[in-house]
Length: 76
Image 1 (spheres, rainbow, N blue to C red):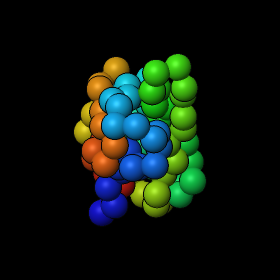
Image 2 (cartoon, rainbow, N blue to C red):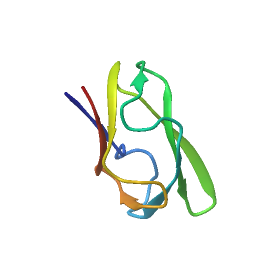
Image 3 (cartoon, rainbow, N blue to C red):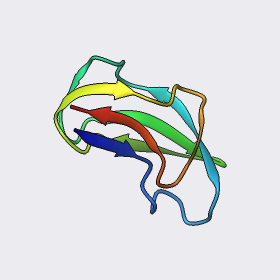
Image 4 (cartoon, rainbow, N blue to C red):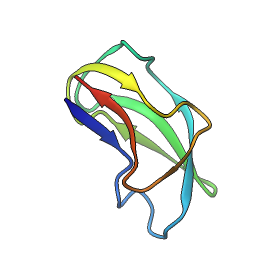
């Protein structure tokens, strides 16, 4: 199992972000490097890539407020 984590370097300041949308749903097969979701911080939107290949389980839904280092999903 690999955790999908908001990277500590995704934004510089200790701000919160929002998951705008998930590209895949829970149960989907994803490949390493696929765009999993879009995260918005202030007026900047970034893609979060899959860290591994496997089956995705979403922990934090779209529109959830997230912080750097937070686990938002898992890939098994």
